[in-house]
Amino acid sequence: MAQVILLGTGAAWSGPDRENTFMLVRGETTNLLIDCGGSPTQRLAQVGVMPDEIDHIILTHNHPDHIYGLPLLLLNAWMAGRKASILIYGLAGTIRSVRKLLQAMEFKTLPNFTPIKYHTVIPNSITALPPIGEFDVSAAPTRHYVPTMALCITERATGKRFAYSADTSPDKSVVELARDANVFLHEATLLDESSAGHSSAQEAGAQAAAANVGELVLIHVPPNVRPLRWCRAAQETFQGKVRVAKDFDIVNF
Ligand SMILES: [Zn+2]
Ligand SMILES: [Zn+2]
Image (tube, rainbow, N blue to C red; front, side, top):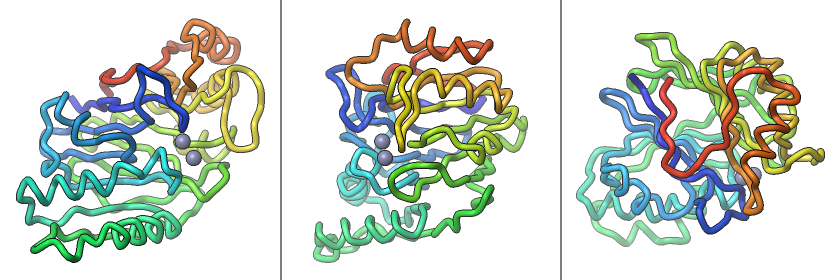
């Protein structure tokens, strides 16, 4: 069974018990990282994964809380002796930021640095990425301050799916992407007020109801999150199972 290990569940301003939101998708043969906040090597070590075991990294957008751990992860993969290339997927602006970030770190001065390959995702209503190991991946644009993509990951063998909203205020294309998913990880930076680029728990519930998903997991939560209140707010609009993610939670799908 494929699983998602939540390596961080906090918003851009995270609390003492939460790292910024990023996650590891584990299949039989594939380790796929979605976003790369915090101190990724330390987080991966806690779940028994070495930095050189990550083959694919999808970055939803170029805000610091979603990409700032990347240079350290790549450095550690090289230190662990990784020779095989690492593939990074993102929208054009994100790939541009990553290239600049890595240039600033002067990795070219390090001998035989791990090769990095890029795949630029063209934002459409729903766009298929190349297959990644045993997973099919599709993306859709979200409503955020910078171009951002939500993701839907399907385990090919079982057809089971999970969707991740990334950062967004309520948006129809995110609902379409997540339609009928087994699990929907939706950001809930706020409790019940609206914002131009983020969602409340209440709005996340409405998105989950519109997408007819099996279970809603609230993620990207602020330092003052009160899990019971966040769940109740989401349950005003969504009748299914709801929980607030905690760091190192495992989501089976
Ligand atoms: Zn964020
Ligand atoms: Zn953001």
